[in-house]
Amino acid sequence: VVDEKGNITEVEPVRDGHPLFDRAAIAAVKKLPPMVPGSQLGKNVKVRYLIPVRFVTE
Image (tube, rainbow, N blue to C red):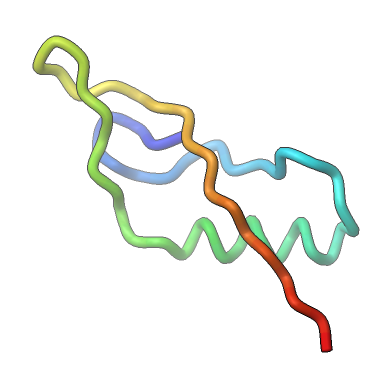
């Protein structure tokens, strides 16, 4: 969720994967800079937002 101030909150994986990858993805998303909040009728609002995270193993 991106809140009214553009902060990323309520981060959770959409699909269950390996717990190690889930924790790494959550940590990476929490480190993102603030975003532009959603707006409705001229007011900032919370917006549910999907951020894809992919891991490549070698």
